[in-house]
Length: 167
Image (cartoon, rainbow, N blue to C red; front, side, top):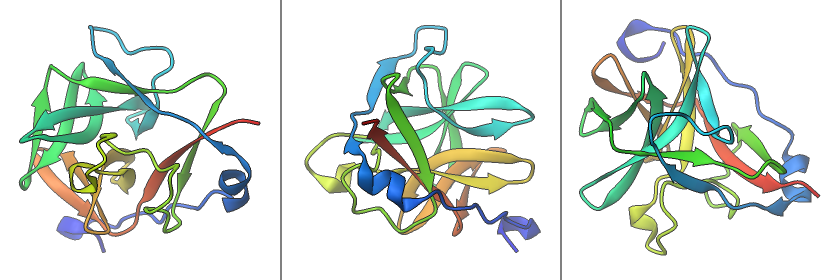
């Protein structure tokens, strides 16, 4: 059973061969200016609506989350917070998104919330199933933390985002 008595769905892993055979790609972060960019990366779905990946700076760290109703919803300090000032994760048309349930957090192609060389300031982007949705968040302490219903939820079963350049 997951948090609050709800069952978490186990997410299937993508083929690791896709990741190892492709070259690394660079994720980009674009300021939100009222519309979601066409090249935004969707981190999941809720009620059949895409949830693009976003990030917000709090206390010197970039925290990834999800865009819902033109706000970035992110987990921080045990709660879900919303911000109308955020960036959206984008990719080149030729890049391939791979959401993997494999333990890949030390791989170079894992998308992180910040390109800072200090890894304590980075959070890998993850997503986890909750109720009828799939919610992007941040990987912290080998668990995916995401905002939902005003709370910070923590999932032990999750996928991590990798972005690779197609050959």
